[in-house]
Length: 221
Image: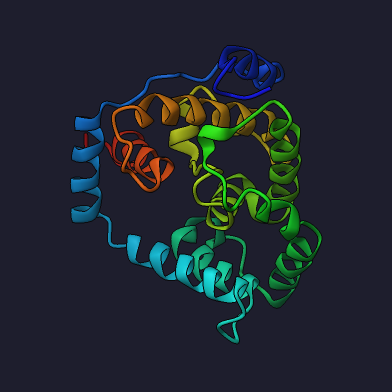
């Protein structure tokens, strides 16, 4: 059953094991525009996001000698540097990322061409399972960032501050999959609401993340 016809049912199914219902505030177009302005002005790490995104596309289309795992590593060591302050990015860790992708990349890539507005009930357990697997290797924040890079219009980003703002407080590794799927469904509802007024926007999920980051992570708004 499609997200567009019975989004309330989908939202309830996705949240049934979450700690608490996430906040479902949809930013206005003006707020998204202000967030983009501040994001581009204050956040230099967007460069690493764009580089990693392009590297992943080149790797997936065999237009570079770099692998998808290497492209992900570029982002993880810059965009998720805090995670590695006490967990060195070792050769073993990189091997674990390669193993993770060997097992799950095809499943993630099924979402690469989709936008989050198209989410349905059948997607929820798949997303939850993928997040759990990625979280075991990359932690809850690195997992979301990696999944987003592989399916940038379908799988949302979060960090601890954003998760907390959406009432999805992050716990120990292995306990966050239900909250991620709930957050994912709320992002879908937000994107569907915004799509009516922003039909030309190429990636509503990225715009929503910029708003979340500026408001909840950095306090710039």
